Image 1: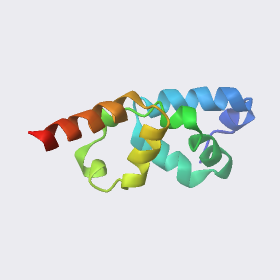
Image 2: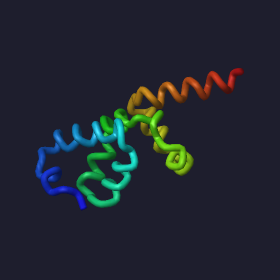
Image 3: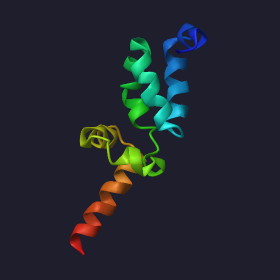
Image 4: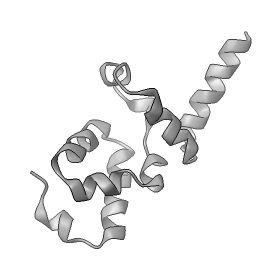
Length: 94
């Protein structure tokens, strides 16, 4: 259950909190997304996609993550997504 104090925060602050969570605890964000419609909508904002730390996703979760998630992160200028795309293309050239 989502803490009602988080839901009582203004929208912009909810977004900031979820950006910080996205930078470190992606599995927690998945749980939030499943428990609260209001926060699910906040999680789908460009600023949150831009904050995901894609390099620290556990491999077990990484293997189950849809490609559309990475595309959204890249589309919203996520630094890690840009880096991973660069590495993938560099590897393809070798």
